[in-house]
Length: 218
Image (cartoon, rainbow, N blue to C red):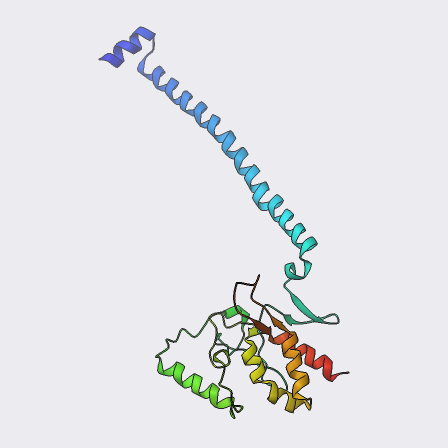
C-alpha cells in the first residue's frame, strides 16, 4: 500500500517505475564496467609486458651468463649447464651423484627422487650395489654419502669435496696423470657455501671434468 501511494504521488505507474529501476541498474553497470576494463588492460600491460621486459633487460645486462641458463660451451657447441648434472660413467671422469629420474639418469624432463624411505629394502639394495661398484675403497677413507644416494631432484650438478677427492686416485690412474695434479684441480674448484652461510662446500662435476679434458689436450 505504501509503495502504491508513493508511485501515485510521483505520477508513475508500476511499469514506469520498473523501467526506471532497470535503466538505473544498466547505467550503474556501465559505470562499473569501464573502470574494470581499464584496470584489466593496464594490469595486463604492466604485468604481462612491461615487468617481464624490464626484468629480462636487467638480467641480460647484469647477469647474462645466468639469464641464459648458465650454459657451458666448447667453442660454439653447448656441452651442458652448470645447473644440471650429467651422467658420467667412464673411469677417466669424475662421477656425480646417482640419479633416480625416470627413463634415464639426469632426465631433466622427469626431475624427482626415488621416494624410497631409509628402511626400504630396495634402497638398501641400491646403496649396497653402489658401494660395491666403488670398490676397492681407498685405504683410510669411507664412502661419501652423496656417491651412493640420489638427490631429491635427481639433477644435482655438484658433489661434496669429499666425494671428489675420493675419486682422485681412479681418475688419475685412468688418465695417466699424477694424483697431486688431479687433486689440485679439485681443490681449485671447491666452491664455498652461498654467501658464506647457505649450503655446503661443493665441486661442480661438469666444470671439473672439462678442466681435466683441457689439461689432457695440452
